[in-house]
Structure formats: structure tokens, C-alpha cells
Length: 81
Length: 209
Image 1 (tube, rainbow over the protein chains, first blue to last red):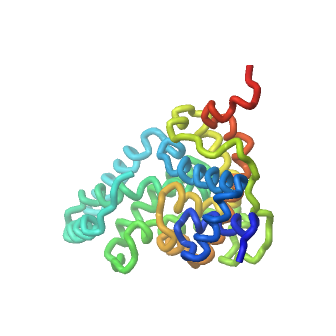
Image 2: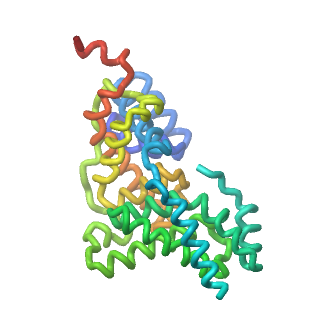
């Protein structure tokens, strides 16, 4: 079975997750060896995933944690009565 | 991101329930980011998300004796956060149609990626440029909510498929489908913008003077 570009795109996310079975992975790998477009789609999609996971992209508002723990202190003491 | 150790969590929970309340700070700290960003994704307002995050944490404390340990603590916490968010959306009557989706993903759409060869990898060092972070945040904010929540938990908070499915109350299959679509949408949205951040070697051919 030969797979085409569209077929590869359908499985890009699962491929990145390591969730495609060995047979399909081998087919995709073979396709990627010769298809520069699909290999760029894979690399760029994986790059998005890597960039998004960096804590610098989504940062908690300044003072968020301090305010949260002050609230915990306040409410837990109230609970103690 | 703080590491989560199930034994440490279980020990904290035992101590808190035995009256050593100060351990609640340590227990909840590794969950703070995920709680806040899930609520921000749902409520789309920073002040409201922070308020809801505080309420969530207090509810976690009050209900801690109900935690059974058959799910992961963070998953359980996030399902409380999600209910807090849903309650607030219902109260203000702004629950959007898109988020009423109960877990079906039959609709077809164009989830094909952008075809390009000019951008393959932007190193994470490029995130020192604030503009890049802003572009990435805007792309996530632009996703429909059912996809945004998945990206927040799976790709930003790096929870696995099973935990994401449990926290959002949808099947693992739905998580996978939505994750796939969300990543394709992000890649397509970001392609024209991220080209500019690609290493210079790649941009020599663009004839920059």
C-alpha cells in the first residue's frame, strides 16, 4: 500500500504522539523520505507543539500565585473557626 | 513546571485531612497553571479566570475528603475547575453554542495544514522575543473553545490524552480528533506569521537587503 500526502496529514498528530502502529509509521516514514512538503508539514506542526509547551508563552498574571495562596490562608483559617 | 509525584500528593492529602492544613499549599501549587489557563480558555477574561481559579482551589479543599485516588489528583482538580467555569458561563448566560458540543465530532471541516517549506523549526530561544509569544497566544485564543481547551491541557500543560479526556469529560477518541484538528488549525494560522522567525539561514533566499 502506498500512501499519499493527504493520508499523511490525517495522521500527523497521532504520528507526533507516537500513536500510529508500526506498519503505518513505516509507510509514513517512507513517504517522508521523498516528500519535502509533508516533511515540512510534520516539522512545522511539531514545532508548534514544542513552542506552545514553553512556559514563556503562557505566563500566569503577575502576583497570581501570591494572591491565590493568601486566599487559601484566609479561607482555611476561617474554616478552622 | 513543578513535577507531580503521586506519593507526595497522597501524603499531602493524608496530612491535610488529618488537620495539617498548611500542606494544601504544596498540594495545589503544581496545579495552579492548568487551573488558571483552562478557566481563562473558558471565560476569556483574566480577572474572572483568576477569581474562578481561587474559588476552584477552595472547593478542592472543601471536597478533598471525596477524592478517591482512582483518578489523578490534577485531573480531579481540573474537572472541578471546569465545573466552576461552566457554572459561571451559565450564570451570565454567555455559554456559546460551540461549547455546547457534548463530544461529537462529526462535522467536517478543512483541517488541512499549510503547505510550506520556508518554516520547519523555530528554536525555543526565539521566545525571548515577546512578539513570538504574543503571536502564539493569539492563535490559541482564536481557536473554537472545544479545540482550545484540548490544546491548553495537552500541549501547553502537557497532560496525556487520558488525563485530558478525564478532565474535560469527553472520550479519548474525541481528544485525539480535536487535538489533530487544533494542531492543523494552529499550523495553518501560524505559518504565514512564523516564517519571519525562522533561522536566518532559511531566509537568505528571500532577497532581504
